[in-house]
Image (cartoon, rainbow, N blue to C red; front, side, top):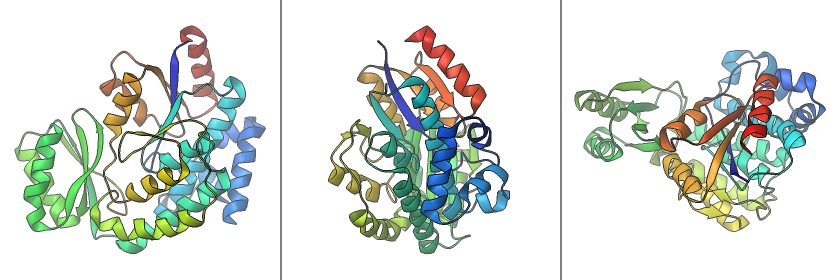
Amino acid sequence: MAKMAFLFPGQGAQYVGMGKELAAQYPEARAVFAEADEALGMPLSRLCFEGPEEELHLTVNTQPAVVATSLACLAVFQKKLGERAAAVAGLSLGEYSALVAAGSLSCGTAVTLVRKRGEYMQEVVPPGKGAMTAIIGLDREEVIRLCREAAAYGVVAPANFNCPGQVVISGEKNAVAKARDMARKAGARRVIDLPVSAPFHSPLLKPAGEKMARELEQAPLEDARLPLVANVSAAYLTRKEEIKGALVKQVSEPVLWEETLRRLARDGVEIFVEIGPGRALSGFVRKTVPGATTLNVDDPTSLARALDQLEEVV
């Protein structure tokens, strides 16, 4: 039987209406949103289903909204499929969704933690001070070199190694702008400023990680039933203390997503299922692990398609 991994998206995957059709059709999805609403003491589900968009895009709301929607997708998919994943991974914020899938966190605990995560990130770096830019078409060594040069203008560092030829940089606005201009001159195919409200995975957010360490110390985490491939190391983790440490580090350290996908493929994973809003992770898989089977579960249509394809490949 082909090995399967579950992947969970991070911030940026959100859109108004996410999860609405699944919740309308499946009680498992409704139960997840109800648990998230109760844990937060706010109608998060309504924000996911109806917006307004500007509120959904606030970091403090986006983070629990993406996690809740991902977990609603997971609940329906697992009801249909059973527990079939060999391992889990999540991009940045998605690591919390992955930990619920792995049995380390409950849904209520996950959405509560990521709401705090969003609050701390925004407090540490006020809107307008930080920036993030995706650089496409340069290799990682070149991007690292450009960040070192641009650091003369402020804090800037690689934030996400998403796939071959795509690295996101993060830091202070002026320094990111300088690195962006240098990347264009160095021959980058595309340079895309990201619409984010904080410089995620940059050293600027280290104080937010320290605050999260205190939250995680009090949070009810369990050892994981399924191995998690950690963002910061691309290593398998199952022990709760190791998981807590990795979650603290990933606030201010780069996400090694390309290495994560290569690790899973090297260990025999042939089917990658993206669970949650959007399809960006499937694109990263196709660029990193050519020939792998990619599926996504985002709504009833993609759910049905994924189940049909699994019947063919498993």
